[in-house]
Length: 231
Image 1 (cartoon, rainbow, N blue to C red):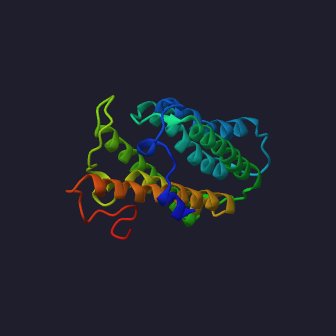
Image 2 (cartoon, one colour; image 1 turned 90 degrees about the vertical axis):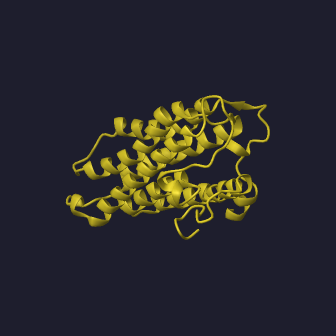
Image 3 (cartoon, helix red, strand yellow; image 1 turned 135 degrees about the vertical axis):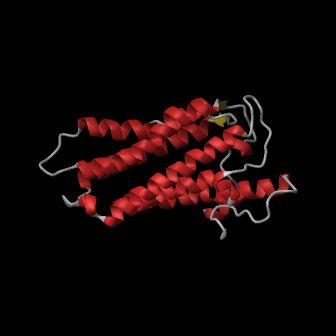
C-alpha cells in the first residue's frame, strides 16, 4: 500500500487531474472532517455515565475532538487549496464517521484508567506529544497559506518552522499528534489509527518532496521528506 501511494497518490490537491466533479476546498474539508468531531460529541452528550471517574477518558477524547474541531471549523475556512473531487470527500467523510464513532465509543465505554491516571507518565507524555504535533501541524499550515494570495495556484518553496528540515512538515505534525494520542491511550484502536495515518500521509510527504525537487533547482539539498535528518 505504501509503495502504491508513492506511485499513484490520492487525487486531491496538486495531484488533481480532473476538476469536473469537484467541490471547493473549504466545503470539501468541512464536510469530510466534521463527522469525526460531531459523532464523539454526540456520544458524549448521550453518555449516561457510571460510578467510575471518567475525567481521564474524557480528556483523551477531547484531544481527539480538538484536532477535528480545528480541521472542520478553522482550517477548512482558511484553506486556499484546489477543488477536491467529490468522491474523495465522500470517502474521507465515511472514514471520519467510522473512526470518530470508534474512538468515541472505545474511550467512553471500553477504555479503563486508574483513578491516579494523572500521575501516569506515559499518558502525560503522550498528551504532550499530541500538543507538540498539533502546534507543528497548525504552524506548517499557516506557512503554506502565506505562500500564495487568494486565487493563486502557483507553488513556492516553503520556509520557516519545520519546513527548514522537511518538505512534509504539516504531515509530520499530524503524524506526531496521532502517535502521541496512541501512546497516551496505549490501545489497539488508537495505534491502528496512528498506523493508518502514517500509511496515508507519509507517502504524500515523499511525493511533495519529490515535486519540490523537480520544480525548483535551488531546493535545499539537506531538507528531508518526512523525518528530520533521516528520511
